[in-house]
Image (cartoon, rainbow, N blue to C red; front, side):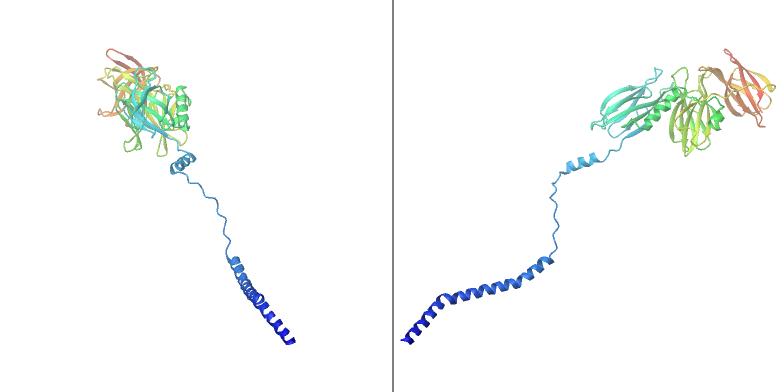
Amino acid sequence: MAKLVLLSFLAFSLVLFGCAGFPFGEEQAEQQQEQEEQEEQMPEQVEEEQEMPEQEEQPPPVPQVPEEEQAEEQEQAEPKELINIYGLLKVGQGIDFQEGKVFLDDIWNYDELQPAIISLKDPNEGLVRQVQLFEFNEAKYESASGRDFWIYVGQTAAGYDIDVKWAKIYAMESKDSSYKFEKELYQDFIGNHSVGSLPREQVFGSRIAKGLLEKGQMLAAGQEIYIGFDDLSKYPEAENPALLSIYGPTMLHLDSAKVPERHSYSYSLNGEYYAIYVSATGTGELTEKRWAAVDVFHAGSGYLEPGRLYFAENNTWEKPAGMKVADITIIGNASKKDSTREFYLKLVDYGELKGDGEFAVIDVLDEDDYHTDRGIVQKDVPMLVTNKYDKTYSVWLEEITTGTPTVKLELYRYN
């Protein structure tokens, strides 16, 4: 019986552990094995995470701007280069200032002020408007792109002959220093800005050339600069300014200027400064030629501002006491007068100087009738003559009678 109970207990134990305990033991073993494997892998994963570099934080994406808008923004950010163009224009000529064009149509030569008639055109030369501008005045021009320009007229010139007409014209996007300089320059001229009544040589420096020019003639001042006398200005009648052209060594036209009597126009070339002085202008009664007495002086660097007109009196002359050599009377322009048997004087022309009385144009001939000089003589301003022995004489005008022209002169020793 006891043996039977023991066997039953063993059987029950086997059933109990076989159904419940043994399967539970396998699952637990598997879970424990997985846990051990995970524990073995965890240090490797941690090491890998530590070895990986940290990724930088990326900025938010920038919105794309169209190329046209980018170009507009760039154009607005960069300042535009201002356009300032200058031109010395003859009738029919023009200047292009990118946003438009300006042409000189004519100079109104029936008015003391001689206004310029100019056409303002678009870049395709379509006429925008025509305007009349007096010297030192301006007109506004608005381009199609909205940029504003000022068309400024400086000196204008018109001679007796229709082929001599020009104007100094500026097309400026800004009224800069060049505009102000031009304005001040000619305000000085209008106000007869004076540098004193000193002799010309002291005012302007050493004289390097002189000449009495008729229309179309040229004066050479060394080999660097040449002065051409184009004509007399028809207006203002009280002054008859000389219309001059300036040329360089290769006869390239460099500049033009309207210079009244007893004024000088300053110019700079290759670092050298020059004063181009007009002492007298007039129209002859005999030849009807137009004359201009021109002197060219070499001025010191920086003493004269280029492009400026200066006013200066003629030299103050006095007849030297006790130095009179002879009284000379020349009758008619075909005759000549032997003065001192060293040279001859011949009347070429005579007339009225504007505001300065009478003048006579005199040729100087040597003993062989070779022309050596030509000058203009006035009652208060003599003509200097140097003979072949380097003796200098001053020739003074005493009287001119018309009809059969008769000129009375006085001759003095100068040195």
